[in-house]
Image 1: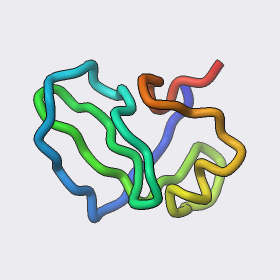
Image 2: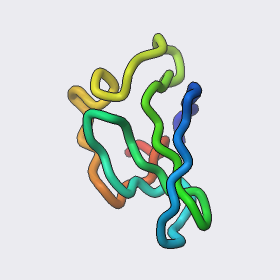
Image 3: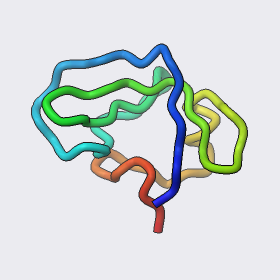
Length: 74
């Protein structure tokens, strides 16, 4: 696991129940992450030991895909 910080504004989105932390969608507006019965859209993130950044910058060079769990890296 790697620690990440997320920053407001975070949009709460209704969706089907899914495992917490699971990536449901990704686009230029952010990462949609399941959190129980809803999801949150994260638009700004700070990985452990790195600077705060917008999601498109964070995703550059990452091999994240829908279904992965945010914060879990191999």
